[in-house]
Picture 1 (cartoon, rainbow, N blue to C red):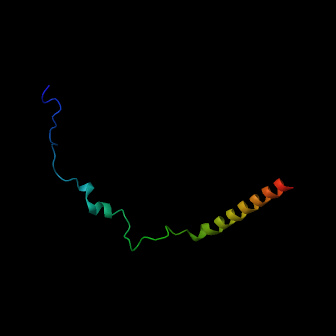
Picture 2: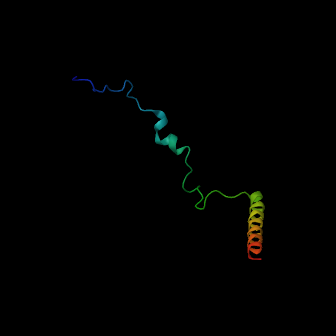
Picture 3: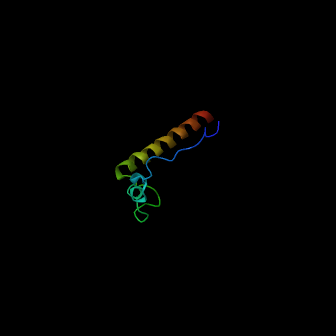
Length: 69
């Protein structure tokens, strides 16, 4: 059984161009361009977010009022 588990070298020893650091950097934003707080929220979604928070607070207050009465 000698030589049963021998490994043969790969047929192609060239460097894969898809694995280079340049191709990685093309998809990663530069540190000076990246926002430290995350992506900005579009202005059009802020009013709907505020409205959702207000509705959730009102529903929570209504549930407590019904539970305590």
